[in-house]
Image 1 (cartoon, rainbow, N blue to C red):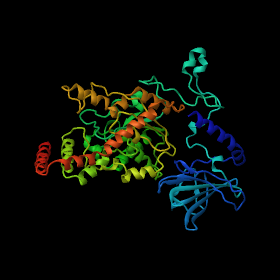
Image 2: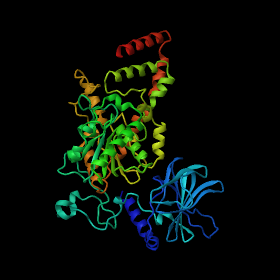
Image 3: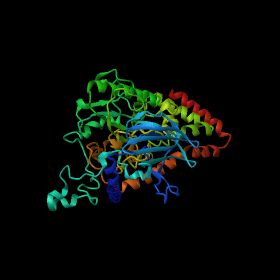
Image 4: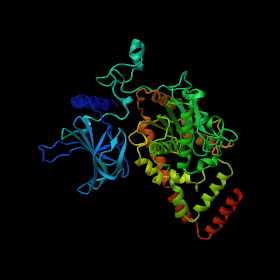
Length: 525
C-alpha cells in the first residue's frame, strides 16, 4: 500500500506540467490492468509503443476519457478505432474495438460509452493513445483516478492519532511519503455507531434463499444497515416480489429469489425509481449480501444504458457476493449431465427446496446464472458497472458457499475479514442439537452468514462509506484468499468425485441405488 501511494505521488508530480498546459483530466477508458506501457519512439517514424494497452475481455464497454467531439470513428487498416478531440490540443484514441457506438461529430461527455473492446495483436485488449498537439504522449501523464476520493489530500480532514501525543503513537498507521494523511486507515470494528457514515439513502439487497413473508430470514435485513448507523427513515429493503407493500417492500418467499437475476434487477430498478420520487436529489448506497451483490451489479448495468431519472448510486458494498461465480452452482450441469444418478440427487434437492428449506432450487435460473462462466457472469465481467460508483467487496475465509477467492471484482477494492464462527444460537440444517461435532463444524463453516454480523466487516464498510481512506490490509487478505481457493478447488471437483464414486459401485447395486433415490425424491415432493 505504501509503495503504491509513493508511486502515485511520483506520477502525479510528473504529470503536473502536462496537466498545467492542457487543464484537462482524463479518466481511464476501462477498469482493467495495463498490460503494455507507453514507450516513446526515438524519432517520429521510429519504433515505440504510442499509447498503453489494457488487458480486458472482449466486449468490455469503453468510455470517453473526457468530454469532447468524435473526430473519427471507423476502420483503420481493418482495425476499428475512435478518436475524440477534447480541445486544447488534446486528442484521445481508442483502438482495437469490436464495436463502435458513436459517429463522427457526436459530442460525448466524460464516461460516455463509445464502443466495446476487441483484440490488439491477437489478444483481448484495448489500445489507448493520447496526442498533445499532434504528438503522442504517455497517457499516464494525464490520467487521474476514476475515484477521486482516493487521491492524495493536501491537508488532514479529521484528527489523527499523532495529535494525541504519546497516547496516539500506538494507533498511528503507516504514512505515505509527501502526504499529510495515512496511507491507510486502521480497522475499527463497528457495532451500531451513533451516526450514519453519510447522509445517503441506503438500500439493502438480500441473497438467494432469503425471505420476508411470514417472518424475516435474510441476513442483511437482520444485521445490515442499522448496524452501520443508518436511520430507519433512510433505509429501504429490496423485495424480490416487488414494491407493492409498506415502505416499498412486498413480502416475498424463498422461491422468489430463484428467478432470473435480470428480472430481480428490474425490480430493484422499480424500487430505485420510487426512491427517486420520494427523495429527489438524494444519492443512494447499495448494501448487498450474496446473490444480492450480483442483482445490484446487474441493476447498475441496466441503469447505465438508459436516461431514466434514477438516483445516483454513490457506494456499493457487497458481503460474500460471488462476483466470479459460485463454484457449487457450477457443478449442477456436470452432475446432471455427466453422471448416472446425479440428476436424481438434484431432483431430491429441488424437492427439499420446494418444501421451504433454505436450499436453492438447482434447476432455477438464478443458480444457473451464478455458475462461473455463465452468460451473466461473463457479461458483468465485460461491463463497466463501477463508473461513478465506489465499490467495495468483502469476503470471509470460512465461507464454502462463496469462497473468498470468488468474492472480488478485478480492479476494485476488496478486503477479507478474519475467520468468524457463526452464532451457535442461530439455526442450521447441518448442526442438529444432538450432534455437538456437527454444530461445531457448521458454526465454523458458517462464514457466509457470519460476515454480515461481523463488527470488523462493518468497520471496514463504515470507513469506506464515510469516504475515509481504505482500511489497512491484514494477513487475512492473503491467507483468506488462499483458503478460499482451497474451497473453490474442492467444490469444483464435486461432480467428478461423485462420478468416480458412482462408477466404483458394483453394477448390480446401481439400479437399487437409483430406485432408492427415486423413492426419496417422491417422498420430498
